Image (cartoon, rainbow, N blue to C red):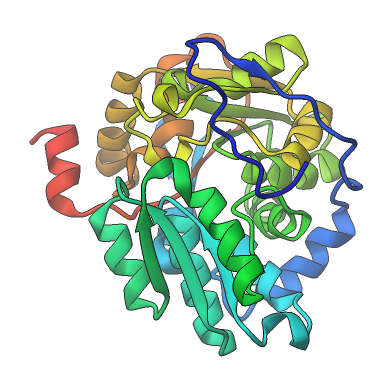
Length: 341
């Protein structure tokens, strides 16, 4: 399946089963080690924050990727992909499509590498994220949500730009997986890792790292109930697509991908222990809870993993637990309007 495959499904209010060609080889632990070296000068080693566990006496930690440069974990995957480019591939520039965080990360990493960047974003994207991406020097094009993938494909072919996928790419998965390597160093006796899922690149990379070095630990993917395509896929064993009309209902704008990528799906099937969904109310509660207890401001997508602890505290596995707070690109007025005063 192409990285440019339209992911919207049809207009029916049911999930669409996707038939995949056999994907490339899964990302290896060695790929993650190489990525860690490539991105070391660009990305921060973000802290883990100790917070009270609302369910029991087990230790609870938050991996604060909201404090990453560009405000989200997305920089890791992009930095690795750009560092892996050969000279000829980067001459004319790079391009991607993004709701915000991936695009800003691409703009930042490309500018540091001296490479022109173009980011195609939906007209519905946060204006803060649009401004941030432009401020990093990228050319930003705003289109209707259903047109961003095909237009990116068109421009890539027409102008010879190198496409850097948001998630369905081995280099991107390896970069995101460096979070898992850091967690293994930072949290002793790690038992459970909760990871948000949109396109699945983060879950794939983190699961690769954790299962390689601590196979007894549980990796649990978390997504909004209103964008629960992975939960549906995991339950049936077949990757399915939801419609964009369905997934855009969630407040977690970074997790509105109508289906996980083909390569992330293969990792998730093999390595992830469970998939849970969370309500919109739980996401809002988690945003407030992280501000109060971890002292970090996160956007809705960044709160989803912590929302699972709040909503499913009685059913999650016991033990030392980490939630990944993936991003904090939200302006204060919007944050207050969501969580209240």
